[in-house]
Image 1 (cartoon, rainbow, N blue to C red):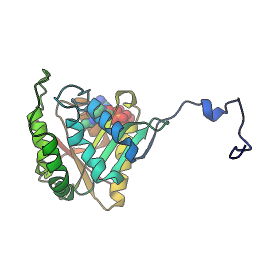
Image 2: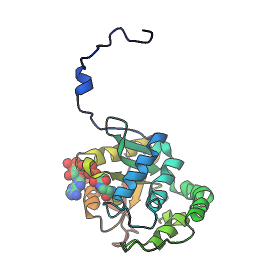
Image 3: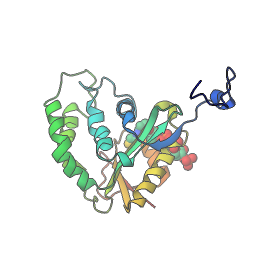
Image 4: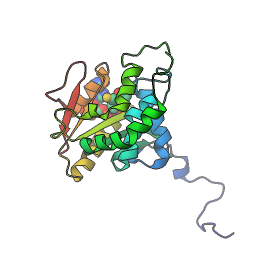
Length: 226
Ligand SMILES: CC(C)(COP(=O)(O)OP(=O)(O)OC[C@H]1O[C@@H](n2cnc3c(N)ncnc32)[C@H](O)[C@@H]1OP(=O)(O)O)[C@@H](O)C(=O)NCCC(=O)NCCS
């Protein structure tokens, strides 16, 4: 038969076919977009599942994940489950000021059209309200922190629960820091939910430090890329 490999064994699986798939880190690709949406949604409530918290499950991903893979797919990396499905990600932008300009021009107007006002209450009453989330999507200037020139890059990292605690978070941060350093970016920052104490312990362990404008109710952390 044409196309059949002469060395292909028939009927008997080789060791590689039966070995359990091993997760590994790889660059983001366009087909990962739905998985990125899902990972964001399932980790967006202080690290836990935000499904059903807001009137539209797309809101969190449309503010904290999808614009990143749209704008800077080269600075997005995923943990692949070994079979092609993304279980976690790190998303970054190298130049927050340029990202804000793009958001103002491209992402914000379409976001406002899709989400002109808050939807009906879900009964979940999150600390970070739907109104605040809509404002964040409409106003990228919130990203222009006082330290933006010294820490021009910023990031978001999220792993589905089954993948947490196995060292992938550390490796994703290392991967992004190396990619940023290669682009000549000296330092990266992030903002986080103060209620997410597990994530804070993770960042502290990795050597992130508080930036001068960090506040207890709006922590801002930074680290050099090399
Ligand atoms: C926070 C998160 C990214 C961390 O990634 P992770 O893969 O679970 O963490 P790792 O296994 O790589 O841990 C790296 C180091 O941090 C430490 N660490 C991680 N979580 C910790 C915790 N809750 N308390 C204390 N130390 C912690 C680990 O012990 C490890 O130390 P070591 O490398 O020196 O042994 C991941 O758990 C996650 O996605 N959580 C849900 C979503 C979220 O909260 N995202 C962050 C939003 S700001």
